[in-house]
Length: 486
Length: 91
Image (cartoon, rainbow over the protein chains, first blue to last red):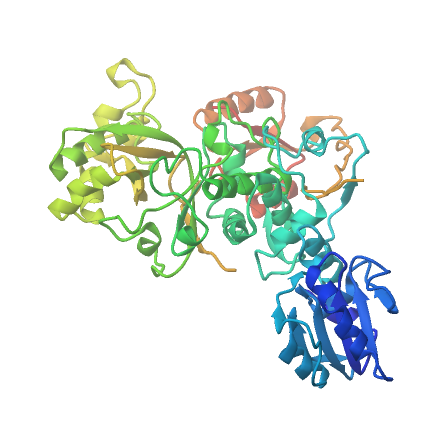
């Protein structure tokens, strides 16, 4: 996204050397520069750090590093040949044969070693690189700049302005945001979606700012962008998820090659703390919903209790160790696609079973515990993800049970007689209304496409987990899977 | 000096005037909007009784689901047919 054409070079035809005082190899090549200035050949000497280095030369001080940026200098010294205002040849560091080739001058630097590696260009320094990238980018960051007072702590300033989720954030400086934008090929001003509840245009840049605050690395940004786009759909219904008095919040499951590439954790403590990618991707997404979508607790967010997962609830599937096809494959994607799946849920809620060694017994345990999703007497509206741990998955693998078989078994076990779930039965007022329970029909607990299995967790421990849904079906929120693009 | 980039949608809060109060509810029609929550019908039914006793005419509407905003055509229909609306939010 950088545009180097805005800075013109100090020579149109001739030689140009980029050097700096703080570089031993640059001092080494000073005699060579002297050899090259003999006669009337134009040689421009550009110094990055001092106007008086090297002494005795007419030095062009590249104080703002715009010339070095224009040249995309990575090493000092570098000798360039310029023709018609463009670089046609270059040699970084000191290599006699290279310098002789670029300058078309034989016998350079007699008495010097044949070669000596150079130093890093000042343009490559952290913060400096991002500042230059931002200054020279055709896609300028356009968000409002909030100037802080000299004694103002940026972390406290973010709290004071209501930008945080209750935890400290990384201050979103222009340099950090520019670096974050390096994680995508998309332009900062591109609109990702119109995000409820405020129905605000959400740009790539706004997502990047919130990703900085959450602590993301740039390579995580495409996951956050994909999730934000998915959230804005009527199918996922982030407005309802934000506004409900229920516990629910966005749960993110990541599938495909990107999981490993960015170092997500699907193993020990996959749903817990400790992995930067898992935690900050989920957090960034929720910060976007808060800051761009406008959903804040006590405002649009009316949750009676909420859940800790509303800070961040994001994990990848352990596809490699799974006995089954992955969630994303089940949802129509290729194993080579990277995807993020959004689910309105909360949890986890435990499933303990340390004794079952047959799939039938273990499925019964799953069903017993899944019955309490929402309430044991509320049926026909539930959805849930079961995170199946490796030790439980092994039982199904060894018996050759597919996901479909397991799902059918649980649905069958949890198709409950109307009388059992009727409002008022067993002395409990909660339950299904008479119009639903009339007659002798039985009602399935879960809506169609409401029971999902994801494989994750550490190798030891016969525990799986339920991520309990909100209200399944098109009337509220449906699991939404989208591809992650760069 | 440190400068931070604004992470919000940068919208300014708009203050809107309340609609003019109706001098007499009997001059128009009051929409009773059930959002499809359990027992919303109880609330709506009681309101209808109270309005009717005072000579106020009402019309009934229902959101397809409480978990999503009312569809635009429903909102437009209510605006076209009624002068006021009561929305039943409670369980």
